[in-house]
Length: 161
Image (cartoon, rainbow, N blue to C red; front, side, top):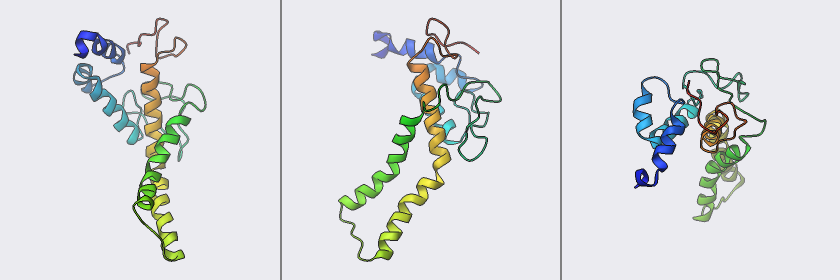
């Protein structure tokens, strides 16, 4: 059905040039696989384009560019703010669900344990969630082409590597 509307062919055309190595043939056949591959690369704190270069210099300070393929991670400072906010709210959702379904702390000890159980995973997965936010921003840049972005040529098509 997507082939008839021409949507799949446009998505595959945009994704060509962003996939390298053994994943290239499999991904260009299905843009959905590429979406999940990019998110996995972000979760592993690797470059969303090639999957080889590291994302971070230190704790959550990203490199400006990938040392392997040279892709610019953040075009403008604050580009990933929306994605960071979204990924921060997902762990908090579990605490809201627990409160909604009747969790009540009977003492300050249980209340403290509840908040520790909420915030320790948030701190422990901060780098992974920031990597996913950078990967989502990379996908956004592919799917919403801006002629001034260096990963696109002047017509909005993806530049082949």
